[in-house]
Image (cartoon, rainbow, N blue to C red; front, side):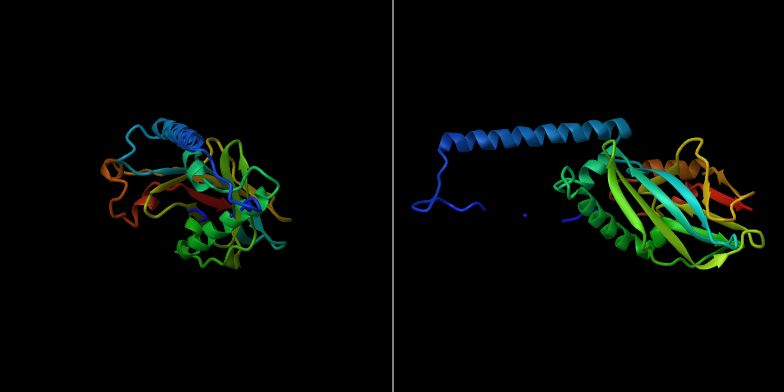
Length: 242
């Protein structure tokens, strides 16, 4: 997921650069690209000692907030995604993220990402009474760089509010193919926002894949045809109680 800007010549004749200077410029560019590649690879091998094989290939630290309306009904799941350093480097490569236009640039990237994720319900599955609930379109979102990592916050609305005191509500955030792993921070606490949040809490239920499922994920090549159900096997589930 990524987003794909002369000075005029002198009045009498075009500016020329001596051949030896051209060579120096090309050499400097080559060293720059080499250095950048080594930095990226250093992130890669720290994160995944066998980069050619095994899912996942991108990692996201997740924080989530359950949004309630004045009647105490669940109306949305707010999410904060912090992408791993490797993906952050590639996703922002060539983008102007170091100037005053950083906010606009990263907002454009987030908008593109979310447009692509709409077809997958933003990697969000909400269960109401054990059945999948319909989700609306994300309208509220923002993005910035935090400590060298791409960060994005967005609000996934439910098409219809749900009373969690009358119907069991749960949600999970995952890439169906498990190319991306999305997990809450260790010891994270699910937050609630709204006027009627007293007594509400969210329990994070850890996944319990079988040995065969773990081996399948480890054996998959980067470019292998994905299993559209593999991600849910490794997904956390959050049970909401009010």
